[in-house]
Length: 229
Image (cartoon, rainbow, N blue to C red; front, top):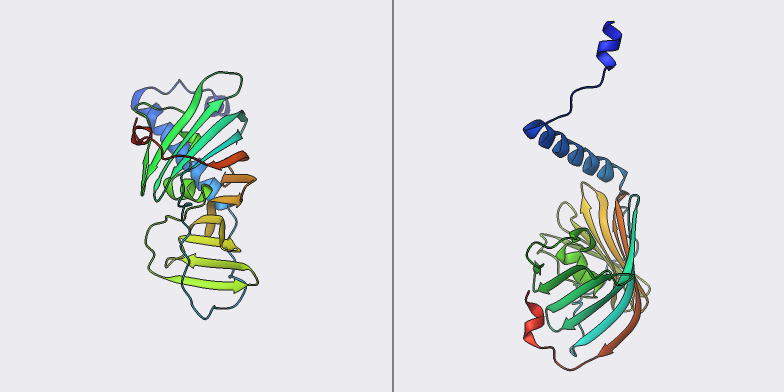
């Protein structure tokens, strides 16, 4: 009988107990995801004669990008279309729409280092943090770092930023192609760009979002109202 009591189902959790269980489960999922994230490796290449990280900025001309997207979040798959509007030097707006005419999935505005979403917005799992969303759009905008190590190999530049390392940057032919966020020596999330074709955002072991670029063109100056919700 003791054995049966040990394995008998417990009464449903209520109130604070249920909330605590949800928090513990969420923290456990994050710990597992971080533990599965790949470790960083030493940077290949040689130190450049001018060891400074180039600026990666938006085009000086406003641009509009259209794309389709696909989200994979464990057992959830979602698809749709999207548009990004880039207003140099540091404004951008991204709108994602669900396929099949089901309406908006998520929207976000970047103004400098700030990520702004509509009040009561849902679908925030579709929006990477501000530095990674900027990287997806080709702009490098990460917090100041205490140390920077740069290595060059052919047309490829790689950099580690922070002590301990907090970010890693990769550029090819002067274009930003990858930004990684590092925690405890592991790559926990990243953006990888194939300029003009595809962008992939990955939260290690948990979520991926792929944007397939359809069109990118210069446009007239955007009305200032699009940077607000």
